[in-house]
Length: 326
Ligand SMILES: O=c1[nH]c(=O)c2[nH]c(=O)[nH]c2[nH]1
Image 1: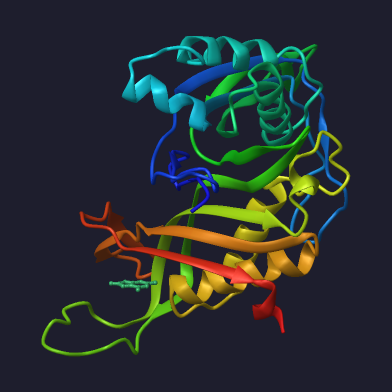
Image 2: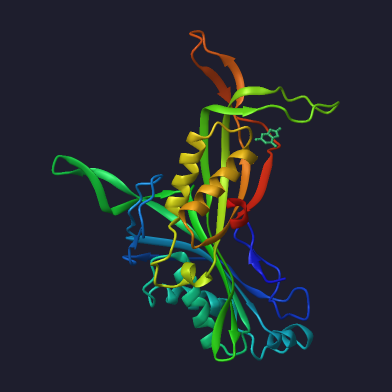
């Protein structure tokens, strides 16, 4: 099983060549904040999005690294630290890498940094790097009588964080991507009308009433892979798909579709993403149902009062592939 980053950006599994199910070590929550990174431009305009550019004036990423290699076995069996790269050194390497490379995406930063690890320490066989963006929005301020983006002042944003993970293996003198995933976490979307949930199994365990029309509030993580991983991981972003366009497709399809369930909705979001971006291989979702709880109708009969849903929450996970487009 090749190692991959899971839905929380954690690294799991092992190197594809490993003789033992699990042997890797590393550092997590290595934060890199870089000012004036290279802007990321949309390669094409799509009907669902007006995204043009990610300015990257402040580029923040929370990185996790894991190293694999048979040379590290003696660290465990013999207590022999020859070849052991201290996790503190890994952290320093990642932080300094932040200023050495001209990247405009997390993917590009991670891929270059992964190759840098393999060049620096020959005993490493495979490096896994996962990163989740730390997002900041440019704050609108008054400038000469107009409200405009400050350009130097930022406000942290806690949802809609792009993410990426890449695993790179040594292959002779060359490096090979064995796994690359791009994504965005915590898109929170609520549609107040135009969603149904009915026709599901009715038996002695069913308490949930059927709904012709419900409020539907979802938390969505979306991950996608490329037909050619280099298109997503290279510093050259001419075939890169910005997470902002994926986010906007999700909102547009949710807006348009009279959906019968979250399952129905995410399938159609996935199809639209694959239609728009032929360079993508598949799209995977993890949704969380946060549909609000109904309290009462309003006295004017036009609206509804809701409150927070209570635990536990339902989830769905699903991969849409190019075969689904046929
Ligand atoms: O969109 C939904 N899918 C489900 O599988 C489900 N189950 C449930 O109780 N509510 C919902 N909503």
